[in-house]
Length: 216
Image 1 (spheres, rainbow, N blue to C red):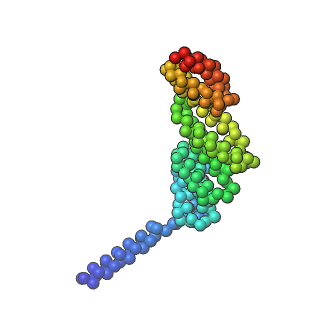
Image 2: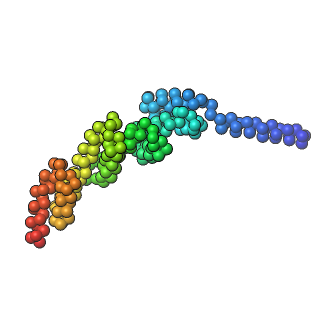
Image 3: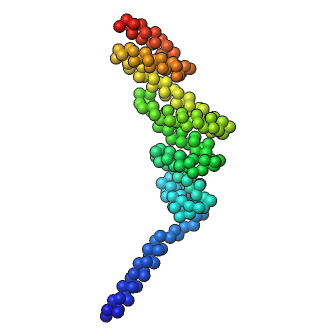
C-alpha cells in the first residue's frame, strides 16, 4: 500500500513538473506574434497589440522583430493616450538605439506626447515647454527630416500658448494692482515673444504700469 502511494505521489510530481514546464513555453512563433500585434494595432485594439509585442520582446528578445516591437509598443501607448508610458517607451528606444533610422520619428513622437496635453493659457504650461524642447531638438539634429517641418508648425502652437499664458498672468497682476509684478511679466513677454500678438498688448501695458509704479 505504501509503495502504491509512493508511486502515485511520484506520478503527481512528474506530471506537475511537466505542466509547469509547458506553461512556461511560448506556443506562438515570433512571426505569429508580429502578425497578431500588427493586426491588433491596425484594427485599433492597442491593448492587444501591446500584449502581443510585449510577449515578442519577452520570449524573442534577440529577434530581428524586437526593435519593431519596442517601437509599436510606444506607438500603441500614444494612441491610448497613455502619454507617460509612451514617453518612457520612446525615450528607452532612443537610448537603446541612438543610431536607428527611426530616431527623428521617435523625437517627434515624444514631442507629440507633450503637445497633445496642451491646455488653456490659464493652466500649467509644462506640456508646451517640453513639447517645444523636443521639436527644437528634432529641427537642430535632423533639419532634413520629413518630421522637421511638422515640428516647426507645432512650435508655433506652443509659442502661442506660452505667450498667452504670460499675458494672462501679467493681466492678473495688473488687475490685482500688483503693478511691479505685472510690469516684469509684460517686459518678459515682449522680450521672449516679440512677434506674438500678445506682445503688442504688453507694450501698451508696460507704459501704464511704469506710470503707476512711479506714481506709487
